[in-house]
Image (cartoon, rainbow over all chains, first blue to last red; front, top):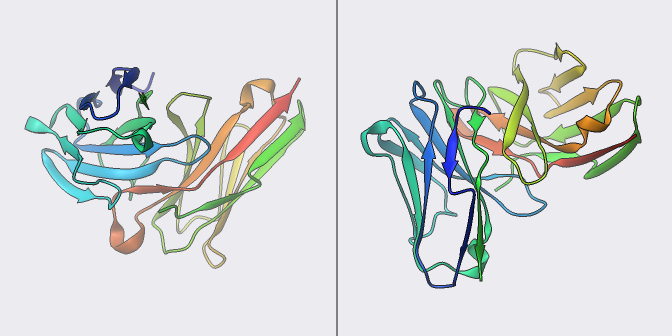
Length: 115
Length: 113
């Protein structure tokens, strides 16, 4: 257990529905990351927060994706009008100094299946 | 987009043998990190090597970094069945000091008892 919690662990939804995932980072960490991983691939960066500010977003993050980190604590990732191509593992990670200087602590992920 | 490329994509060895995985990357970096992932689980950090370091050890792990060739290797000595997992290299601090980690596609290691 790395101390980063993600909820839910699994989500099955129908195409067109909205889904929301939650991440609780290690409490003293001010950096929070979201990644997406499909089968057989490495994690792909989606977005990154420092405290409550969203500082970087990938081009992978289409208009249907939105992430928030109110009050710089937990974070939510929402996918609107889900598509089958959104099926993946969504990983959250946190750190205190950022990946340019130190390791990231990853949660166990949320596995999304879009039917 | 993926920064690193691991080689080989898959590796199968017998318990007790050594496993070597290689990683190449494209841009300048501050550090290179190796992570391990068991099937369907999150990633666990193994080791971080900074751009001014050439070699680092942690238990049965040995990592080398050659910034002139933009490559790294991870050696696991005396492998065990419990080492079976996917291993990813990731670069940090690249592309103008970005704070994100950029991962490769990984090497799937199978250690047979």
